[in-house]
Length: 340
Image 1 (tube, rainbow, N blue to C red):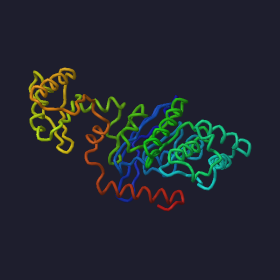
Image 2 (tube, rainbow, N blue to C red):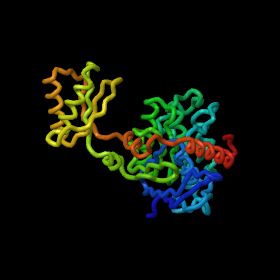
Image 3 (cartoon, one colour):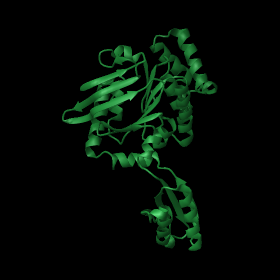
Image 4 (cartoon, rainbow, N blue to C red):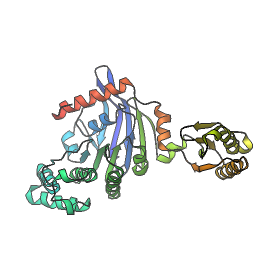
């Protein structure tokens, strides 16, 4: 079967500014694919092209085996889109919102009502379905918005920063809903600035910067790019930080010689890379004990996706990236009739 999403040398320009500069992307059917990048990297532009809200300047983009430019109408009936802002009427109830979306998709009165009931149950909103949306929590609104994007059982679902602004409980609620969708075979393209979110949900991740893909792989593959595991030590007394850094570096390096350490005086933290996890841990504990240095915490950890992100993208988008994002939002607003 063809891949759910394919782009090849995809570009989008606004005058002399390029929001996308040759993006290549492949997303297999039935997978969750994360699209990460700093502000202005081109993530939202890519989603708007793939959902037919913007036309590419050049290159090729296909969704569900259809060209997004030549077959835009057919593409729209095969996709769902959850944007950064909820598309809900707060005065209507959750059920009324879903019923309205169903009628707009020509399901008819009975079909729309039946689909609304199914989705309320699926997203654990049946008990609150008759309450006005203005009384919903942030997580409930996002789950309802996600339900609305699934009115027509789309083959491919686009989630553009779906948990922005939610508290931890709300984010977990949306994560559970996304996992349920993926388990049912829906292909999901997820853009997010929460690295933990991509780590939790995505089968594979593409990192985008300056409109181009700069890395791709599973979360573990991307973390492996940073190499060795690390040992972190938090000392009780900040005055002992320099001495602890010397001891941790020696223990982390073992027979290969001392390792370079990084310190954070505010957190009283010493960190160093290790090759032999257990030898570094036991050596560090022994060395600190013999030196009479108390440690509040000692932990071995693998590189985080946050560290991978910073390593790959540097300091993130500068003023040109902000300009690209602003131009993108303005053009998309014009295309959809919304104010930028």
